[in-house]
Length: 139
Image (cartoon, rainbow, N blue to C red; front, side):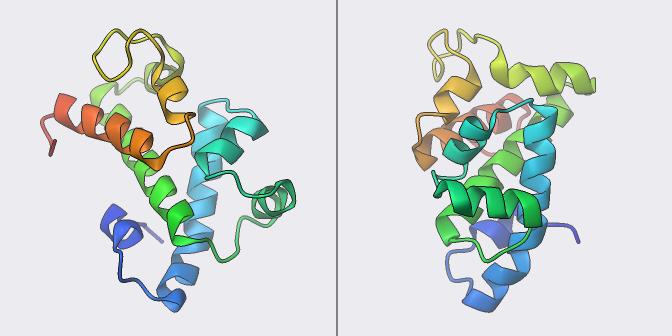
């Protein structure tokens, strides 16, 4: 199943739609987390700080009904990952970009990952918006 970012961001999605997206969203998130070499703590933060038991259940089962906030977070991460694959077609460069210091205005010398780990969903949005603007997409 291909997850379209609009489906994950759609604010009026009902519980059945949310449940349908949760499994693919989690599997995609954990695949990206592995490629980015993220710690469990970093993954938890990016997912919105679910309880440890909830996080490890999601990680083990790769399924479960996710809150809309978590789906929104995963949607931004998916968009960030996709934009990096377009901008940096070599997988190692794309996957390592999030951890490299960046002097662009949204980062102020910090890495994109540091910005994303602030815990605010708006910071995920800022990173995605920056990358989309870099590739000539919406800003």
